[in-house]
Image (cartoon, rainbow, N blue to C red):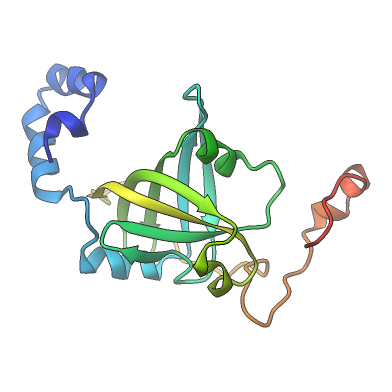
Length: 195
């Protein structure tokens, strides 16, 4: 990909200030891609969480943690992935942003064997997506068409291990408990009905 399409003027200004333009171009040339590699596929399939960055129509950012069982993010095409959106707090910050600005960034991290992968692209969502039936507890399926996929240096990732999976992660044959905050008096009269 043309590095001038990968880096905007602000990035270029700082690359020039700190003499890293050649390095940035080489990193993009050697590591950047728009299709998932076999290693990307295996890495993403093994993840139980990722961070999702979105922005509203005015460019105001938001970042969310998304978690699930291993395999809850699926590669659906050479340049596309899909993930379920589960019941949350009803604010729909991420999905609301996707409706008005489809540009998203996903960051997958392995804290046990430091590794990370970024996926930037355009998102869409559907409540009638064919994959919905395969994701127990999902409200909608979000699909991301990757524009740029690239690994990041893992040197600053702290080594941590997973203590235990969340009891709230949906799965076939299991009804997750209601989170405690949904039983607080201050919210009881405004909770949406179950579908």
